[in-house]
Amino acid sequence: MKTEDEKYCVECGQVINVKAEVCPLCGAKQPIFYANQPFQQNRSIQDDRWLPALLFCLFLGPFGGHRFYLGQIGTAVLQLVTLGGCGIWSLIDLIMIIVGKYKDKDGQYIKSPVNNN
Ligand SMILES: [Zn+2]
Image (cartoon, rainbow, N blue to C red; front, side):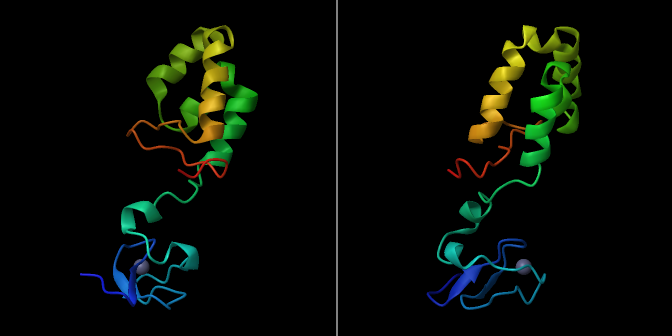
């Protein structure tokens, strides 16, 4: 259980002291502004796949570059042979990535710094 002077580690999810800047268990640096939010919401910080995915989509979108990068091989190949659905499909993907609504093969959102909700 978590009390008032404790918080969850953003990396390992263990309960640690609310003033801890570094997790004593895993050594992860703690963002202070997430201090009083539950662990689940702590995971909404930007996904480090976001920028590469965005760049792949931007430059190689019609070839399914971002889907290959994110391991979505099936739809990546489909996108490649249709040239990104004549550019429309890859354009939609690009928008979804920018606003943080793009999901990887496990159904996890690729979190964007543009929209952190
Ligand atoms: Zn930790």
